[in-house]
Image (spheres, rainbow, N blue to C red):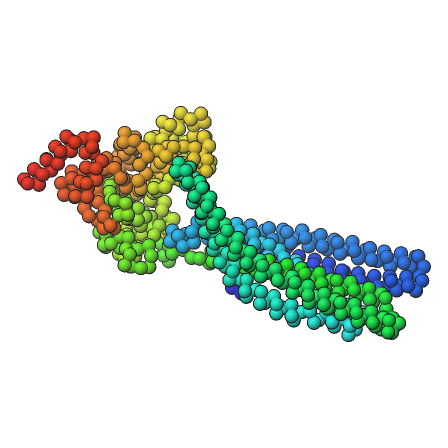
Length: 596
């Protein structure tokens, strides 16, 4: 009931169409069950040798009833499609809205491919089920009940034969439901895995082609698709049993009605059941049969959509782990950052800490470099600053305030972050840059681009800042994409700017120019630069060396060359091959300084 209540909340402005549909269906059914009754009268009139005017009068009544029934049915179809399409629209909107509130932790739990499947395939399944529920699932029982009542009215005890079809049919459908539902649950999980495989392949299609791995990817996809097909086939095979069960019950009863009604006509010479009644009884039997067939279709659709409804409900009711406090701080005073004994784990297993006992204090306006090997938790460290994740132990403060005490939106407005995987969206270059500030003027956009060293290549484009960027930024190079993303971050005028290895695709000269621009134009902004190249951080006020989630060393470039083996090794690997003599001289100077 909680699931139904939550999904029903998405009907909203389409409540009128949703309510109108069953009412119109009721009108359609009432007239349809009266038509056989009038038909029986027409047959009786003809059998008594009535005149043509009498026949035409009864025929006119039948025609009017058919037209009215058609009008009710057409109106019901219109309101039903309006309600179901509107319900699906609102459902997707509500899911998407809630997804926007998710923390990274919650998104990681669902996976991107699973969320896409839930917003597309699952919503479509629920939409189809909703359409059948408000129309067919109302029409079929009403048709069954009213046809049964009319058959009992027309033929007395003989009409009671139709009642015997319901119990065995209900038992059969319930058994099928219990067997099939777990199978569909497995199917949709495998569907998620299939979509994940597709997403991974398309995202990395350049790598696939460069390594000539198309055949491998095709075989992997074929295996996943076959797995889904086998489960679907198994479920559909079991679900298909409801039609034979229904037909067996219905036709058995149907044959009994024809036999006993025929016997009654012959035995009583039409006294108990006449030809008109027999004809209407036959029609009512057909209506009962059709209603059961439609009910069977509804049952199949609801069975398929039940798991989809559960999966949608999970997204709608999932709560982010990052929440605003009761009285949040809405202003970030400055760009100072303090890590006080911070430990963090992506999982609840505290034995697998990504960060351990980090103590770090950064003054507002400082330039901080971060160096470390793969897996040393460089990105994890900076993701705690805008509260993309919450610490497991300790606290992170920005502007002297614990990040958990801020209004999340206000905190993130003050912290610009250029991630490792730079993403541009379909639209013009100017549109993409204005993600940083929707109200930025053309001059502000160009100024940010100049600071990021993006202006020089944008101006060379035929349409300049109006150049269209394809989805994902596929029509610009990696270095151009990085510079545009840096410009976008600068437009926020942040108090803290984090560059997470976001100049790796630009040359050293451009990298140096970008950093020089930062010094001159945003001196009060705290700048944190994660880099693989020591050249990108050597001019930083301080450099942090991370190793296995802990701070190994902190100091300037020269200090770390003397005291940090990790930094020395990184510097040597990047510089010795091309600058052997310079490195040996620096190494000798460092040794003499230590000796002194």
